[in-house]
Structure formats: structure tokens, C-alpha cells
Image 1 (spheres, rainbow, N blue to C red):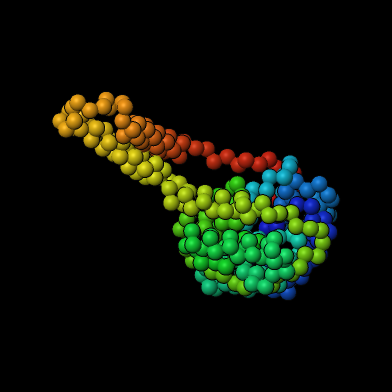
Image 2: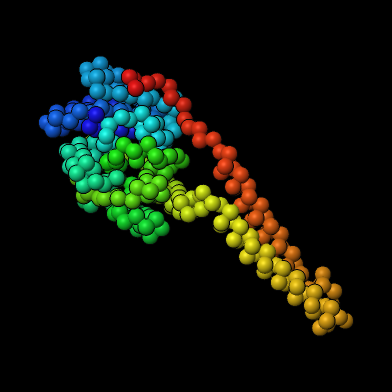
Length: 315
């Protein structure tokens, strides 16, 4: 199959039929073999019923329905596990991503030998204060921290080689950082394409300002995990050793001072250096233990999916 389109959604009943017809029109005009996978992330409207109706009329439609709302990252992860297309396209269900971009994205992956192409909504139709400015700050911080030079990390319209989506594990709220996850797995040929952004036609956004706070916290997490996730002892061990050496140095100084330089002076326990020495050695030891525990957990962890599927359509 040429293309698998993965569409996570939550309460988007108004746009699904229009989006489906638009995608089908693009696929047929370009003679692509395709399937469309809708992941219903716990919708409380008639989204799933509409997906089932689309499936009856188009065998290329597939669906996954979550038991409850688990989030966009889990929806994408479930979709990535199920897709079979040589090129995987992700897009949002709110009609703000244009299916007309699909042929060029497909060409860039297959002809340009990219592992991943991320969309860049250079001209946006979102509120400036609540979305545009925080998004620019967020993307700047992501570029500096990750080393991946993209203008728009959070754009839902992306294209991947199939082996890329099969190699990454999207959990928590890490859908914002899929290019970084891909880079960490060795897929460094990451490109960018300026794409058309359209004003929301139906409903309202499901994300508020808290997504930027969560985004920056996740950015710190992914920076740490990307550097030390597979070798926690390198971080905690080095920090623990540094602090232990500081504490041991203070203790050595106190011992020399009391035995040889000032034997008639205050007791060691009456000097503040003693408590600095004690605390830093204890904290250093704790960091060492944290590193060992991290290595043990890393070696024995079980990568179970933390979502539950309620229903499937022809996967």
C-alpha cells in the first residue's frame, strides 16, 4: 500500500465526512493505494457512528475506538502499531490540515529519501496571544534543546517512512516531539515543508494554554531521556560522585585541622563544615543509588501500552 493516513480525533463529528471525501478525492486523482485510519480518542458525540458509516461505504476506512480519552499521543501510538502503508501521513480531524499536501509529502519521502517530513504552518489562523506567540517560544526552545531544526514541532500534518513509526514509542504527551523521538532512534534525515493552514470550520479547539506548560515540561523530560534515558548511571553517578567528593574533601579538611593544625579548637560536630560534609556525602550516595535503580528498571521494564481499545474496524 502506498499511503496510510492516521487521524486522531475527539468529538469531531461535523468534519469527518468532509475530511474523508477530501482525502479520497486526493488519493483517487493521484492513483494512490491507501487506507484511512481514524482513532476515536473517547469521543462523546456521534464520531464513531460516522466512522462506521464511512467504513460501510469505503472499505479503505479503518477505525480504532478507545474506551475513554487517553490523549493524542496514545491515539497516534495505536495508529502507528496498526498501519501498513509504505508512507504514513498524520493529520488532524478539524480540517485545519489540507489533504492537498499529501502528494507532495509522499513524493518528498519516496523520492527525496527523507525519513520524516514535518509540516510548517508559516501562516496561521489562530489567536496571536493564546496560540501564535506561545507556539513560537515553544518551538524556539525545542530547537535549542533538541538540535532538530524545525519551525513547527506541533504541526499535526507529518509524513513518515513506515519503519520510522514502527520504531518510536509515543507516550505521555510526546506527540509534540515525534521528530526528536525519531532522531533519538537514528532517523536523522528530517525535513520540513511549508503547508497550508486553514481556520477551524467546526467546533472549537480541544487544547488550552495548559498545553504549553505541559509542552515545556515534556521538553525537559525528552531532553533528559534522550541524553541519559538509556544510561541513567552516567548522570546520577557523575552527580553523586561529584557531591561525594565535595563532602569527603570537607571531612578530610576537618580531620587534618583537628588532628594537626588546631587540636584545642572546637569539636568537629560544632563546626558548620561538618554538616556540609555529612549532607553532601549522603546526597551523593543517594544519587548513586538512584543511578543503580535506574539501570535496574531500564533492564527489566515492560513496555505495555497504557490504553484500552473498545472497538476496531477491519484492522
